[in-house]
Image (cartoon, rainbow, N blue to C red):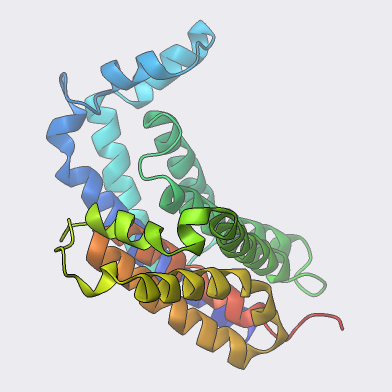
Length: 265
């Protein structure tokens, strides 16, 4: 995979991810207006105190009409990413748009998927900046490696944190999470309540996440790892309804595949 192909792949998948996220914001418009649970008049009380000028800026940006215009512009930006790919100015807009939404929702609306989306947006912005400054020396490499190293670190840390928790090592965490899922609680005789099944699933997750750095050894390993990752995130979506996570993580895969096998060793 060439640098340009990786950037095109990132742009396409990120566009789909942002499209899904933006449609969700349109779906919850009623909760974001008036005295809804996500109205700015409610959420701003939970943010740290800022200077009067910053507060006035936020109040302007997050008033209902301006926020709706912002979402429409963000929707258009996502469609442009899918249709024609990324460029410096589009990524700069999407970066500022995403950061403003993080402020709008007290730091994050949907946790890890928001920050992973910011990671891919920042990586593409960095890629275009480096390509603009010195295309022959750096090209898009800096942005692609930025996304790759952060994504691998996220997988690795997630696996290590699970390993340190007794409930993951003994398999009980799987039952706990599935009991709280869309189809939960599990029935008393559910297959997943069997301790050997819980341990097998838990240790498989931990091993898969903990081995993330090894995908850099070859593109074949990276392809297999990303395929397993896509299946894993789809299952998380299926059982827990976290559709944002599926697209947000998939958006990082072209960078992982590009960087694999390119370590200077």
